[in-house]
Length: 313
Image (tube, rainbow, N blue to C red; front, top):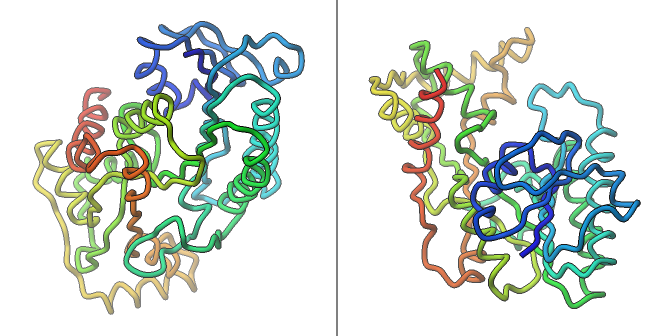
């Protein structure tokens, strides 16, 4: 296949290029254009309008503005990038001969906090903040048009993606553990879902090659892990002993309350984020792909990611 990937020089795009380039012709669409093995060429967004991009069979839309955990980005920037760029590339797809379109949205387009035991695609969308809101606006635009053409259109909602080259929250936790700082929230047994980059590449290959119904699909590993389990996995991969403090929950809530009043790093909102459950069901996606389980276990994927951090030291 000839495949166009937007945002190809980012973390996910670089890994997808490695996974797909042996069997497919890969073209990029990005704001930068370094040469990479397996990449035929990179086009700019202006090239969408000047006819320079060759015909392709599929478009994978990765380009977007990531969630700013420090809340320093203007809200309109999210909508300019996550919503308007998606509208632009989807309109290009509808006018093209391509027959598959894969849009990387986010579970944060669904809800900020999971109601109940786990999140499914049937939960009504209720995003909080410009990141999730801009993603769901892009989803709504795609869904408003996906019945007008006999094409396969897939909205993917991954939970936290990790792997070699990852630059997200997992790196921050790794840095804390590397310095020997104890984890003080051991009394909270929250569960969270993750998406290993190897499982992500497996899913994309399936969507490209199989007859899958158009729709919204959540993506994640099969197993959810508690933060305590995550720390144990990270320490095991580093050959370190885990230092987890099981301080009383009441004490941590009191400290977070003080932090909210004094604008300290540990406040009520951050404590909620660190200790809440966010478990995502991937049942619908596995059913569409015709598989019983993802190829990579959550813990194995995390070990591979942590060892890639170690190798960069």
